[in-house]
Length: 78
Image (tube, rainbow, N blue to C red; front, side, top):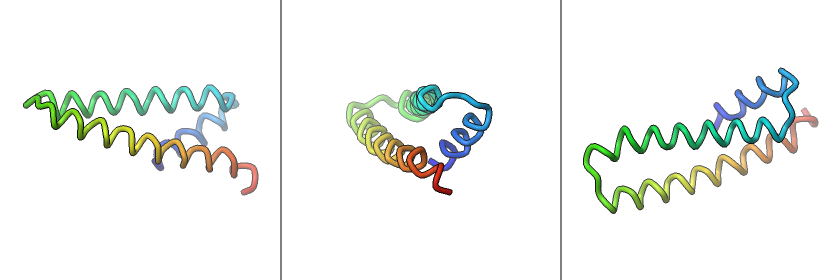
């Protein structure tokens, strides 16, 4: 989640619009999650592993989204 904020600060300093930054961060999260899935769970596929991965993916996606919303809301107050 800190990587998202660091990357968002970098992209915002490059004068990239906020909506574009959100899309870039969402795509980066999706790609890293898919890479993690294929590295960890495809060696020994199981239905339970897929469900656990999806629950973790959704939970951390929710936390990441809330963290980024707070960052974008409070970035001008600092």
